[in-house]
Length: 180
Image 1 (cartoon, rainbow, N blue to C red):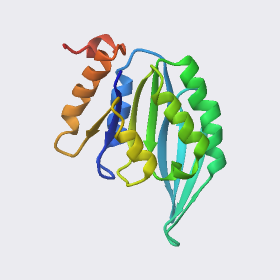
Image 2 (image 1 turned 90 degrees about the vertical axis):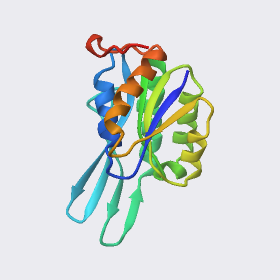
Image 3 (image 1 turned 45 degrees about the horizontal axis):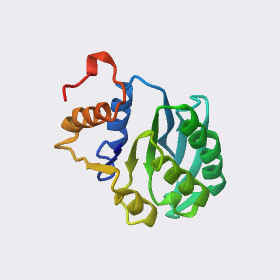
């Protein structure tokens, strides 16, 4: 089973495309969606659970004035336990939005992600374009298909990725069933 990841330049619409895709899926969904909020001179990175929609965790804050990113590595451990492992045990599709450089220093989180990738679960996610070892290790796996999106192809990618999910036995909402 292919694991699907979307990548592309910052601001091109990777997470927006991912959200459109998962709205068309008709199975149990786990994992998380990342949200970025601007608060004055800082940007807050928050993870919203898809396993339990009431849970969210702040994983980092970027201070634009100081040009510093402060990550909370303990939150990655909590996300591993409260979202990812529970999703692995109880959900059909696992969403990983967005994996990048912040996770480099979170060994339990990375271990959990690879446990998910080594499972027979369907996975769809977003990979940040970066040179980090963690992201590169995921992208180079034989069971991973990475779709690079840009402003010209992102509209076509939704259909292509939905078709691939369906080929991986992920049920789609009836009006979005695609012909193989």
